[in-house]
Length: 122
Image (cartoon, rainbow, N blue to C red):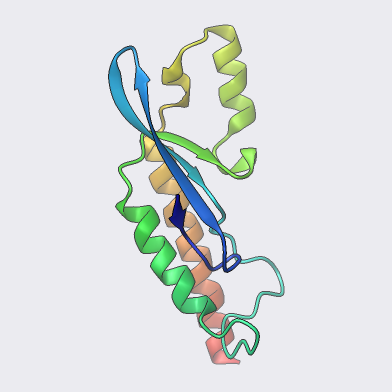
């Protein structure tokens, strides 16, 4: 369990070692890197360290050598499409998606940075 706060103070990302036909792989279940509408990142009196927590969490997510990308919500990692492929030919390899993980984290970080910049201008 890795504390990855920002979305909430207790947001947690989970990792686990799994075996794929004897090959060890790291599965990552991302908590939430999303900045929901209405989140206050600048001068937040209730959660003053929110922006710094997001920044720390993105450093954690980017450091993980994720091979099997999962998340708190299926749309984070394309669960529906992957499950459909898995049903057609059950194999752990359907879930192996290190590039999808990197792209998702990068896109979510850019969204966070854009919202942070927007709020700093206000």
